[in-house]
Length: 267
Image (tube, rainbow, N blue to C red; front, side, top):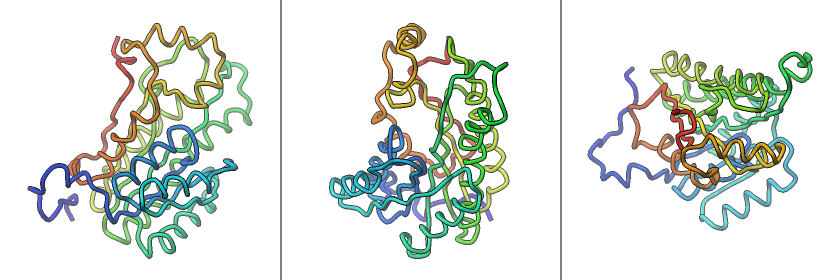
């Protein structure tokens, strides 16, 4: 079966961006970039399942976005690093929230820690990779099974500009390597799943979220000096890119990695 094509490819372009009636799930959706992804997809008309692991106010966040957008947004607790747990959550979302359907999933959950490469232990190495790499794979696997059964689906992975360059001056080998791995994983899955799903990545540069603000303050000036755009991005500036990849506006795009970093990786 060829890659999905909308019934009417001449639908007016703004209508192609609509996600009205779509069922979406977003891992890591309760904070930082994830909240803006959830908000953007809801603003485009999708019903969104917000998957979280540790946020105390995930249900309140979901309810607030639902009230603001007029669509269904519901929080689901899960653990992307546990294959059986995230699979059960995704199946639950498809069956209960989606009434038997799941159109799009955003594998967005991620963690970052600064550890010199000579000081990693099995535990600290696994802390990053179990979420950033294994978590993406287990999320993708569970979603892919739903997509294959439906005959159509859309997986979007949040990678990082760190997948294609080495950040300075922080030391984060596990984070960088895991993000590079998921970019290539997306390409592999895009080819393997061509008959029933599209798979793409978004690789953000520095974003003003907790992942960045929890870093040592002296690093921010050094990062700014290396960003041609001259500023750090607000998470809300990314939501339209996720809507684009989730929509029929890019129905022929698969295996791509959209780098959105204010020119950081260009010099």
